[in-house]
Structures are given as structure tokens and as C-alpha cells.
Length: 223
Image (cartoon, rainbow, N blue to C red; front, side, top):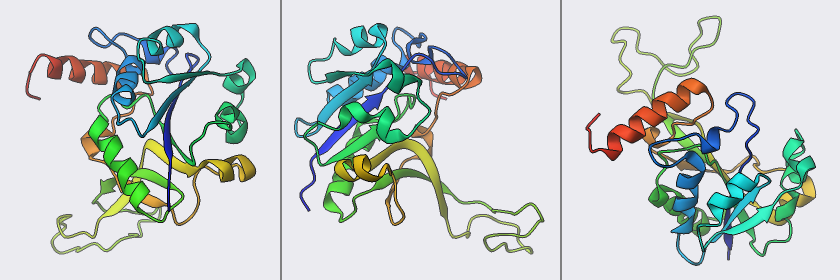
């Protein structure tokens, strides 16, 4: 299957939980600038887009020569759904498949993103999403275990691992998405991401922790 992949960063400054989080200072940079740096340096065979409405985000993206800026309409930014309407400005891009890349994953590495794309290209799948390892007891509200627990040892070391969505990215068939509105379908390809790369900045507390961690690591401090 010949798959042409385009990566896009959907971005806006009207986040309800943490407004303007994409341009809040982190060291000498910000979340959106870091995300743009990552996709700008990807291999040339991967198309790179930012899907934006705010001029402040446009000024950041314009620094990067390998990124195509797609200006969103105000109604698509304010809409709650459907996804095919929110991302309608991508319908005319030339790619067969698109990767929705979360710009709030400060520690997600460029190499991890590229490896996920190449794994997807080599597969027969038309849909994929990021997952992270979950090796723990999963318990229903009534106390019934969903996976097997060794009650004598109470150890998690031998538990058969499960996976949970990491919310780093989704990859989907572009034309089908604009026909049926589904960005993910049953039978998708799970692409494993290291847990330490899946820190998602959603709240003020997330931002403070990510900022602290990033600035410490930038100074070479071992955590």
C-alpha cells in the first residue's frame, strides 16, 4: 500500500482549561514553537502543515521554511464538531493519509514521531493511534479485576501488559475521513510511545511541571 503522509499541528489560543497555553513561556521558547521545530526537521517526503487561526501562531510558524501554513476559518476554530468540519481546510492537501499531531506534547521526540510514521507506512492499516504501556491491575467499581491478579504475591511484574491511548497523535485515511467523519476505526494500528514522552499540557499544573522539567533538562540537570 502506497501511503503519502502529511503531518499537521492543529492549534488555537482559546483553550478553556489553560488559555493561550501554546505560547506561554517555557525557557526561551513555548509549546507551539517546539512542536514546529520538530515537524520542520522531519524528512522531506513527509508534508508538514500547521492549521491555525491566530496571527501570533502564524508569526511563529512563519520562521520555519518547511512548514505550510493553512489558515483556519473562525467558525472551524469555535466549532465543537464534527471533526470533518473542524479540519475541513485539509481536504484539498495531496496526502493519502494525515497525522493529527498534538502540539502540547513537550517531550515527544521527533524520532519517535518519524518511527511511528514509518511503522504505519509499512503496515496494511489505514488508521493508527499512539498508545502507552499500562502494566497494572485494572479493577471495576465493584472490586472485580478485569485482568488476572496473583493475590498471594500481589506483584505486577508478571502481569500481561495492556495499553492505553497516549493522545500524542492519530493517523487516518484522508478521503475516508471527509466522507464518514471518522479519524479512528476499530482494528487500528496501536503505535507504542515511551511513557516519559506522553506528558500532555492541559492545565496550569501540567504547564508548571512541564516547564520545570524542560528548563531543568535544558541546563543538563539530571532528574
